[in-house]
Length: 161
Image (cartoon, rainbow, N blue to C red; front, side, top):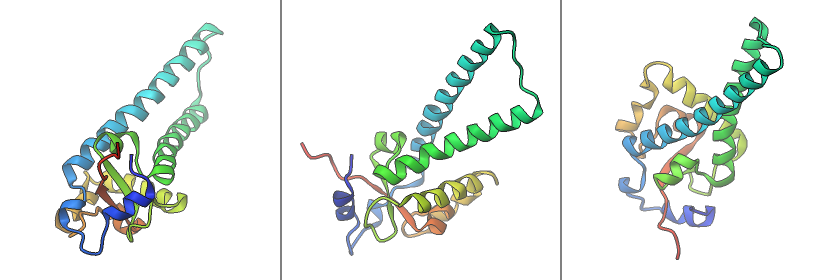
């Protein structure tokens, strides 16, 4: 786990491109995060469905289904915003030893910047992941969501024993 003070050390004035996380490690981290949050929400939905069936087969109408889908999206976004704002790392990023920092490397992004980042992350995914193409040519390997939110993703420093 990289504390903000250690994370700032990662991003020095003479930062090389090796310190910035690449597309593959970030994609694996996103896949881990998707499995964690979507798997957790699926278990919660299954438990709620089981309880509903036990108390008389309660079903959701159209408005209830829209509200449930909205709650699902909010819970997914909140997962990313909370972890990025608190520690700069989601569980998937921690597994891949990556950390999200503000563009100047001063620490994890504040909640508003994390919210902008997660909204743009969704927009980057919609057009067949085209929003990630800038990461292939940007010197700091930033996707469109990083550019708009003013963030970078770097490799976390090794843990201190």
